[in-house]
Length: 333
Image (cartoon, rainbow, N blue to C red):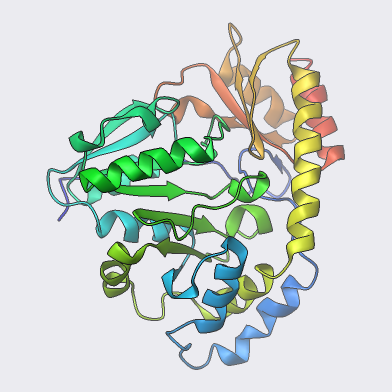
């Protein structure tokens, strides 16, 4: 059941091919062989896919070390989020969501008629679970890049199980860190996206890992054939590219540190464990910075759309030469 009109929210990204897109947190490169996998799906797409998605689920479970029976294939991380919220939130339910964080959490809770309660993103693990029907965590958090400790997360999940409170953990950016997934942890629904690490936001492939208590409900509301054949083949292939993941993680960590060091003397740059950095522009105008960057061929993310942020931009970590261009522009605004 929905509650009134719920507006769509603004995100990063651009359709202008002449701009270097630092507004979207997606990998600027993709694994070798992805194009061939996608194109091979054309003929197979002329018939319905096998709705069990067994092969995809097995490779997904291998990637996060869980039982493949717990994996629910989805058309991107956003569908995983909707299934998780739809299966746990009813009219009037209070749901703790981090702030600042991904705006879709607020929207999805509202769409189910729930009451999203904003909690500071660095304090959300310390909530009293008995006051909420569900809690949503983004790890590492977007847009701050803050990585929660695994032990602290596990403690929250245990408390929530005792209070019969659902825990939804969005791990869209976790592959860029050295922390292992909580997929399969009793009491948790973990959301995973193939968008960010593999640089394929338009493919729309992802999955949820729902622990046993949520498995039946989520599977019952999942749309039949919800993952297209091209997305299925591409996603299955990407999930096997562990060397690509390792190389990307190393590159992003090195470049993120370099960018931070170059910009920290001009701005307040928030330390991050994600493939992006949040920047407090201080007395400098966000509009002016974004306009100046655009005139130089660079698209930035105006972070003022995130709850609680009023003078911030967010920048993705891209390839070294592109990061050089970004550093030069921001150092001279």
